[in-house]
Image 1: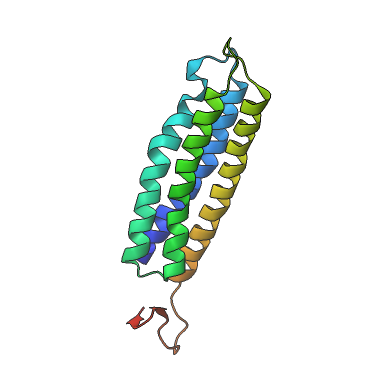
Image 2: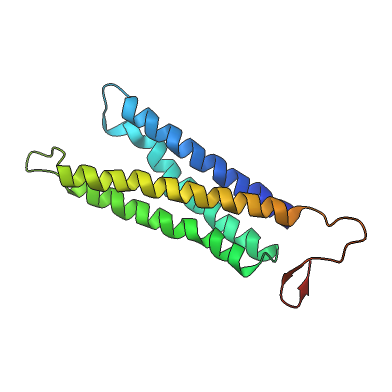
Length: 150
């Protein structure tokens, strides 16, 4: 299960990297129509949440320490915050539907929250790899949860 935890957390990290790429694709698409952010939207609303849930599941099945399971759960909350920030930014337009300073400020928070989420996912992937490493020869088994040997 630990190898599966490593694989799924690495896929989640790759999906986060692609999310930034897809945001850039949307930002630089000319002319920018409704579909400019389609890849970013699908990845952020479907792929990332599914991979996050799988990461949580495999962290639990791998008997990861509670702190690591909690860290694996954190991106799910940050994804929910992302959606709320995006909705608020999109709703913060003027009467003609144009951007407002408030809406643009909120949109900036969307980017910052994405960076925080990506940073958390890097930590989860690194910790998953560390957890999956075999113990050195002759070493006592690592206890990952109190009372449960690795």
